[in-house]
Image (cartoon, rainbow, N blue to C red; front, side, top):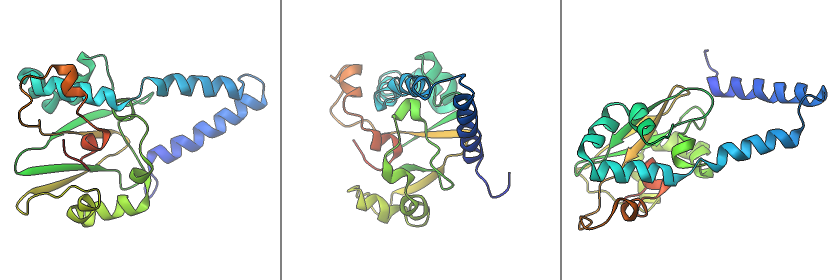
Length: 195
């Protein structure tokens, strides 16, 4: 589809289908809202934090999540998206590289792993500026990286979602997986914050 993002087309079709189903009395609007609420109730940044903590504590899982994020998160009973299958790519922050995620066309996002997207993620200002001047945008979030740090911006699509594997904080060797997960924020999983 040229010039049109696949998710926007799908959204219009879904809205039209909802309207037709409601007009014909097949489905009530409240029933659709309940289904959406049920879907969103399992969408949380706690899921991405769980993936991160497992990767920090289990080197074999870390290798699998970096090689095939989709399959690795499925081991934990999780997915990146909703109804439409999506590939998950997990990118790792290191001492010398920092990753940040955007969707320049709309706001594709691994909702099941990060919860509903923040309003700034959907804003045109973030979507256009983070690609052109990522260091400046990250500094506006309060993230000041050393000058030599390489910053890579990953552009999500309707088929591929990205999640950042943040660097594990120092002196956390004694923490349990659950305690480590509690340190992880949604912004760190997007790449606009560090832990």
